[in-house]
Image (cartoon, rainbow over all chains, first blue to last red; front, side, top):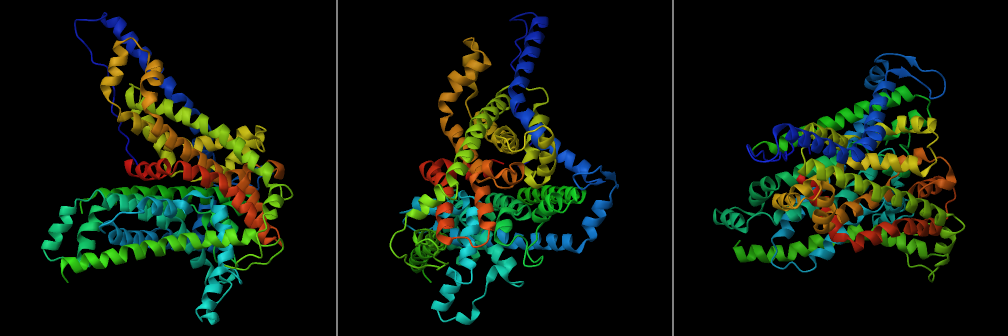
Length: 315
Length: 277
């Protein structure tokens, strides 16, 4: 996602024919100015309402500010606190754990099921299935969170199912438990993105030549071997894409957790997004919240760069 | 195991795997639907057949709980964001793909940076700055913030689209004396409908589902968007489950309808949008 080159459309220069050189440069200059005018309507709002606010956050992160009185300059103190505060460190751990549920789990599930599904003979009903699997991707996360609060509730669908199969002693109020709330929230993320990963990988396997599979089979490769030496390496671009989308979603998660647990019980599900919101809009610690936001952005940027790097390396 | 046996195994395994996936996706929706049909005041019941069909929950959610006005303000925001953002992205993508923009490569890189800017890092100053300008609690304030956040993907998407159009088409139009403006609207746009529709659908869904920005930039309860209102409603104690279920269905209905109608556009947009990066 970091292509920075763009094919230039330099008009061919016909030496000798056409208007004299001076007029040509004038036309060319005019054309370039017009081209800039086309880009401006996009650049202006993007710069004013996305880039400048991000820079403004970086500036605010150097101050101690409650949002009301005059800010005091404190240098990198807020960053020191981000590194040492136990609550902030907990948030970082939780974000890391969410990567397992938002990225590792759905990508593994998606790969295995895509490998199973891709090469069956008939393809009937695939489009309907694609539509259904994508559904969690479409609805607002607030609605997803409400739906899952009820699945996890004391009298919710999950406990109901456990009781029905005779595992009634395992029931819990999942989102209210110090042990289970984080995995419970994480699995909602798995539910949201698993379909996306699977559809992404399925469309990737259609690109893979059937002959490669035939060849692997001729060489006596079993299904497991085939999976690791054909499907996974050839789906590398798709895996990289799924990784960047889901890692960003995990690190910057807010909506889901805000609605399901609000970070609780205790601090057992706080993530950076929740802390930024709490500190800036309830805790009167705008500078600290800004420092946390800057660190979060830096981590996301590094993650995206690393994932892109990995995907470009030869297998 | 022979090849035939393996294939037979797979032919059984594949539908089974798909069925499990689809069931896991659908069961939560089913319990939401069933909950919305229960008599008002029914506590949470999991997957239970309702006592008759109680559509009055939807009426209450729409009027008494105020989801009618919430839906309207979401629609106003989307109507302000989608056409403006699609237009800006189209113009910029067109120029970056086909013209000699001064510093074009660097400009494009600058726009792509936005793909990894999370809302968390822009929302704090947006709140204080828009408040200073008197733009919090207003449609333009929220709309501008959303347009800015959506711009990087749109420019990327439209630039990729215009880059695939045949060069000769543009050259021919230019030789006929068409300006760059005429070339865009008369020559390129007629065959750009699919790309533009996809972008519009994605923008609509993103705008409708946006939560953090309206939560912070719109503090006035009467002007909230539908998902923000839903979030506020959930936070209250003694929530009437069938009412909240009905409200949730009302809020997700527009995106689900748009999705079902344009599903090919949406899915292809997400998939190829991601892969072209």
